[in-house]
Structures are given as C-alpha cells and as structure tokens.
Length: 67
Image 1 (spheres, helix red, strand yellow):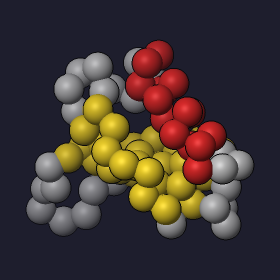
Image 2 (cartoon, one colour):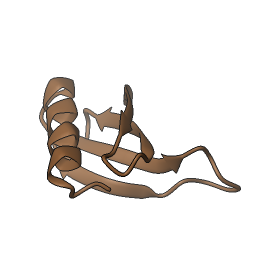
Image 3 (tube, rainbow, N blue to C red):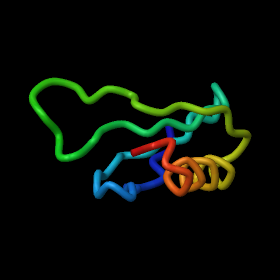
C-alpha cells in the first residue's frame, strides 16, 4: 500500500488516500480525524498507477462523488 496523501472534499471532509499496486486500486478512507475503531473505505476505484490513483480520487472529489 502506498500512501498518496490526505485529500479534502468540497464538503470540507478529509480522507486518507492510498494506492494498492498489487490490486490496482485507489482507496479513500475516512473521513478524518480518526474516530474510535477503524475508519471505513468510503471510495474505491481501479487505478494502474499511483498517479492515476491521485487523478481519479481528485476527479471523484471534483465531481462530488466523494463528499
């Protein structure tokens, strides 16, 4: 798993985002700050590279798909 950073949605929520190269997936986990217990994966999409993962998560935020 490669941490690709914290992304902030238009609604002001922050998500910890990762690229999983073996599974070719990008994930957004959150929202932050961490609550009791584990945080759920709230967004997942296929991605072939770390750069594509960043672009797809950014696009999901821009379109409002990830709130």
